Image 1: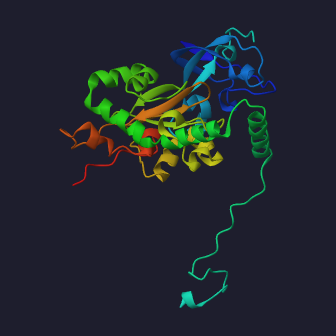
Image 2: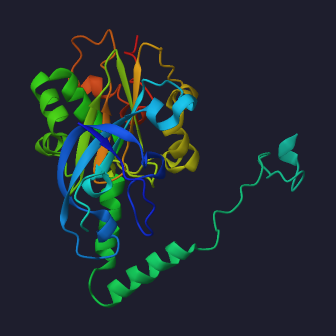
Image 3: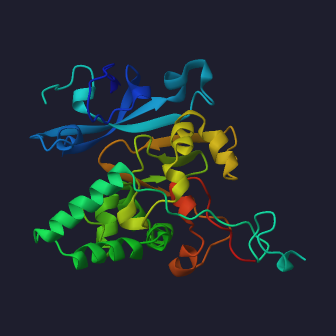
Length: 89
Length: 215
């Protein structure tokens, strides 16, 4: 399934690196539900959220600057960072 | 002769340069860690012996643990399937105390080469392999591996042919990663114990390949 990562820059502890924001990838696997470290970092209530592994092509991430466009990068992305996902904290 | 000189050209009597003392002032975070640790000990939450025992437990973990896992995957197809499906469960069932760590194993084949990085900090499967190498935590490794992995790998001596897809894994959240390297050619019939000796730490990060069989 193709997904786009939210292009947001909220303050605080976040686990979606800048270079992935606004980029489109495919879900490589569903990892299960985990308490978001973005809340846990502040000892805030952290309901479990779905965590995905999303695979991006290097062409998508780096455009013409990609070293090898077909190579890939996988990262763990929480559902609240996926457009259309559950954004409730 | 250099050994006859004393304090000459900044060299020690052995002829080597003096090393700078490893005594930089404590950083803000180091000071905070010490303060919290001492407070917790004072208040009876933990003991100094418990802290020491956790440090010992971490120092006892080493890449040799991961090498055993890899060697078993090379020799036991059922275990390999279980490892690729759920590395957390497979390594626990093999007897390793990996604590609460969630582990994912990614397989190198003739068409795919995997490499692990953590751009945000230094996430590493410590509970299996022990502490990461210092270079793994450098900004240079972390920033370059996601942008130009082939160049970085070449600097480690791993030159990927164009026919091989490079897959980079950025450990951004709750998973930790181990590369299952491809079994080296010419190792048919070797025992898991002997094979484990060929598996290096870097082979499990993806910045290296297993050693060849001793001639």
